[in-house]
Image 1 (tube, rainbow, N blue to C red):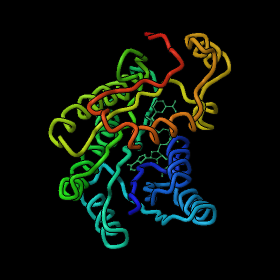
Image 2: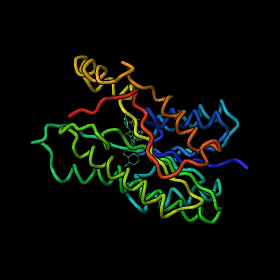
Image 3: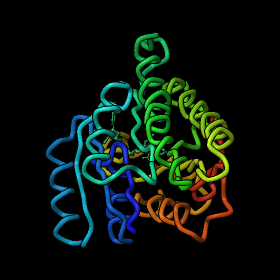
Image 4: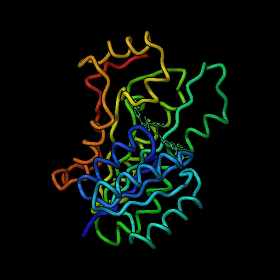
Length: 248
Ligand code: NAP
């Protein structure tokens, strides 16, 4: 029986790499997207063309319970339910600290933390009934020891996502395993476009291997964590950051 994987934010840089890697491994794939409809459907087509798996693209704002509910109803109808959830959707709105306000802080927490909670809560009944489930939360080194006041809200959300990971692992034990991955600097197109050369050079200097990570490297780690080889890994956070030094 093929496992069904739901990847949130699947049209993005890391999400699409995860979707392609897991499709190649033979999982059925649900691509959740929010605004990137065109990219999501192009990816759906690519996966259907290249791999012999089911693939569905479904729009939902993960921060909204009713939207997550509607997405899961469609998945249950078409594919039977979600066995593996990758909470990858995330937003960041870097800005000078003085320009930050409570509304943008709340939105970041809503998507990055409440969104992961909404999806985990909604898929957990099926997982517990099947006595099998894997949840991987894509956190960040920013939730551990990397601090930028320009994205203090993002950093707080990723620290909260790590805390949520541990609580969900306790709540859903023993059959559903919940782990987090904390990537450091991953050179997605968007990430590289968003910063000037000097900043990128300084950031690379803080990484022991002296390069950014690739989305495909995060995807490989997700693939390992949901494989049988990782069956004894639960309730943990794995950094993938090239040996990045903390900064503030
Ligand atoms: P990205 O390309 O911006 O992808 C993030 C995706 O999240 C977007 O495709 C977006 O979907 C989706 N999203 C945003 N709001 C949503 C909502 N309300 N509901 C559903 N989906 C929503 O960024 P990325 O670099 O691939 O990041 C993926 C994850 O890795 C994020 O959680 C990020 O925090 C984490 N991370 C990234 C890095 C890095 O260096 N790139 C480092 C550490 C952690 P639409 O495009 O469809 O709107």
